[in-house]
Amino acid sequence: MNSFWLRLRERFINIYPPLLGAGIRARQIDERTTFVEMNLTSFNRNLVGVHFGGSLYAMCDPWYMLILIRLLGNEYIVWDKAASIKFVSPGRGKVTATFNIPQERIDQIRADADRDGKTEPTFLVDVLDEQRQVIAHVEKLLYVRKKNKR
Image (cartoon, rainbow, N blue to C red; front, top):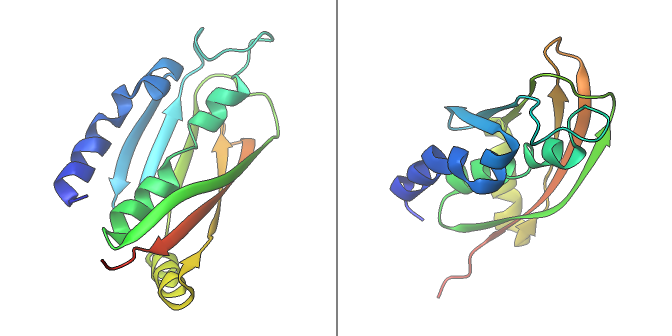
């Protein structure tokens, strides 16, 4: 996928129905960083009045994969492979998460995939409340491999 389509997809991701319905808003800070926020609304509130766990996970789901797809380019396949979320405290009000992959890590992922045929990098992110307290820890496992030359 060329960079035009990637930029267009990222520009319109905020109207993707699962994110829009949960009130999730994303803003690309730079090519390696995405900032995501979600206000507490009647659409993402659970029965006890705090953020629904599925919405907290949804706000963390695609970002590491999208960052790697953009930065590794068309020569690599990038997929989400596994994820886990650990809830630390109830989420009330606006919650945020910042997804960043340093250039050194991107270079290492590329080198590992080139050398071994594939790699499965793990990423961690914390979901924070307005007081910058941790609401949840999220771990993402991705699958990256170099495309076969045909």
